[in-house]
Length: 310
Picture (cartoon, helix red, strand yellow):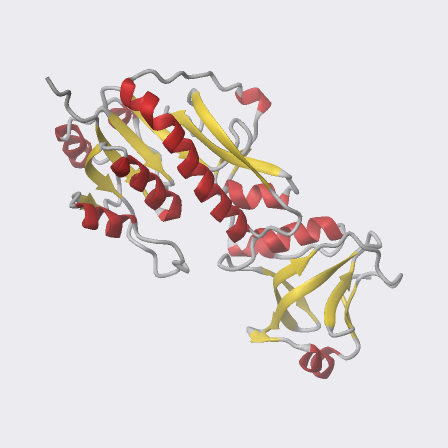
């Protein structure tokens, strides 16, 4: 007698949501419902659509404002899922929802738990100059990113990786992780390991205003902020000489500045900032008041150099 397929309800969004849902479908999971978000008009949407993929697969899709509404819980319960999976879904699920699946509810988080629990870990690991991060599949509990760990997949962070480039690495890592785990999940033979939250860290969300550059920091820290919020994120910025300077890219070589710190200037066709610690970084993509800024425009607006500190 043939056993029935494993069933699931998937809460998902963003590119990791698309790739992880793809893995489940390729692995023969009977996904009976997809819960996702409406795209926001205030965000730059550069990722594929979870709803679009579900439509191709013939899976019903809902986009509730509150996924924990009793009607949504009832609809998920009607699906009789073995699993609930959350892949970059942005809302927390309450206990009523987490108790629905027969085998449990599991979340894919974009860090090596218990480090960088909470919001936007891909941005925070760059801001903090980490050299490694990854993705973790863990059991969902009421406390965010606190349930028992199933497995992880790590990636290396290079010195000039931007948040977008790092996120693409995490997409691939998430796909590898889920493909590796899926046979054990389907067979009911996976293992779980308690997380030691005291050995980890928790970070909150970020706002566009958090991209303001503090020029008193070291060159490495300034570079890390710039690459952490580079497009498609809002970008770093500084209000200087009565104008708003937007900094959308930087390049780190670890080299010393010219000895005249706290200034932005051009040299050999490239824009640099000499920072307070005597190191410099290249500003590879800059604008002023929203308009691209090349060397000639810089000289016309600011002169030979722009002071960024005392």
